[in-house]
Length: 487
Ligand SMILES: [Zn+2]
Image (tube, rainbow, N blue to C red):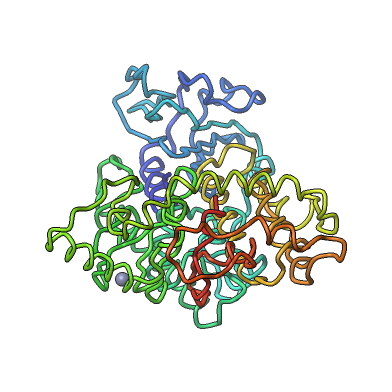
C-alpha cells in the first residue's frame, strides 16, 4: 500500500499537473470505486482544481466551491498521467480524471478491487474521513510519546495504527523499527525514554529520507513503479537476506496476508520472534536465538557432509529439514492435540464467568474502527489483526501463573477475531475465580510426548503456551512445548 512517502510524491506530481486547471470530467469504470452517493460525481465536472493534499494515505483533490475528490489507493491502486482522454483498460482501469492537457488515471491490479473514490463537500465532511493519526513529520517528541503510550500495544501495531500516526503502513514501520533498533513486538508500555526518542527520530528520518529518494527517482516524470518492496529497504521484504547493518539474515513474523520483517541482531538482541506458521510446524523445536538457529544450520550441514541420510521434508519451510528426526516425527500429532485442546476450550467456556466477555470495553472496540469505514483500510486491518493475536501471546507471558485467565482472552481472540479487554488481563493477573476448577486444563493440556524439549510436565497449562512465544522482552526460558496453542 502506498504510504506517506509514496503518497506525498503522488500529491506533488498531481498538484503540478492539475492545480489551476479545469477538471473537465471524471470517467468511472470500476463498479465498486465510487463510495459516495451525495454529492453526485457529476457536480465535480467543470470545476477548477484549487489544491491537492494528503490525508493519511489518501489523496485529496480540492475543487473550487469546497468540493473534494478523495482517492484511497488501498493496496494495489496506482495513479498515472496519460494523454488526454486515454481509453481505460478494462482489466485494471478504474477511473480517469480528464484535464485540458492530460488525464490522471487510476488503476488497480488484481481481482480484489479495494480502491475507493469519494466526493465530499466542505472541510467538515473531509475531516470526517481523517482517522486522526498524528503527522509523523510534524509531531513533537512529547506528543509522539503520549500517542505511543496511550494504549499498550506492540510497536508494530502502534506505528501502523492510522488513529495514532498518519500514513505509516507495513513497509515503513519495518524500516523505522530497524532504524530505531527496536523489536516490532516490544510493548509500548515498556519503552524507556531513550527508546521513545530513538523511535521518534527514526520515524521522521526514515520517512523524510524515503520521500526525498522517491522524489529524486521520479524526477520530472510522473511516479511509476510505486511498490511496497524496494531494493534500498533494509529489512522490509528482505526475508533471509542479510541485514545491511550487521549481515544477519532478516527474519519474519507471518500473519494473515502479511508479514513483519526484522533483523534479530539489530532489533531483538539475537532473539527470534516466534513465527506463527513455523511455531505450528516446529513447536518445541523453534530455535530461540539466532545463535541456536545458526548452530542448527551448522549441524545440519555437518550431517549432510557426513552422509547421514535425511528424512524427507514434511514442512513448508527449509528449517524443518534442519531439525532432528524426532521433532519431525512429531508433526502428525499436532492436529490431534490441537483438536483435543480446542474441544476442551469450548467445554470450559462457561466456567469463566468472572472474565468480562464484553467486547465493548477497552481497546477491543476501538481496534475495529481503523480507517474511516469498516473494511476500507484492509491492509491496516490485516496488520492490526495479526498484531492483536501477537499481543495476546505477548500479554500471556505476563501472567504465567494465571492459568485459567490467559486461556480465555486467547480463546476469544481466535473465535471472535476480537481482542481481550484489559479487564480480562487484569482478572487473569488477579488469578482465577475460586469456582473455576483449576485442575481441568492441567490434566488435558499436556506436552506431546515425542518431543525432545526439557520435560516441563503437563502442569504448565495454557499460560505457558502463551508465554512460550518469544519476544525481546521475554527471557525466553519458557519451554516451547506448547507453541501449538498459538494457532
Ligand atoms: Zn542487523
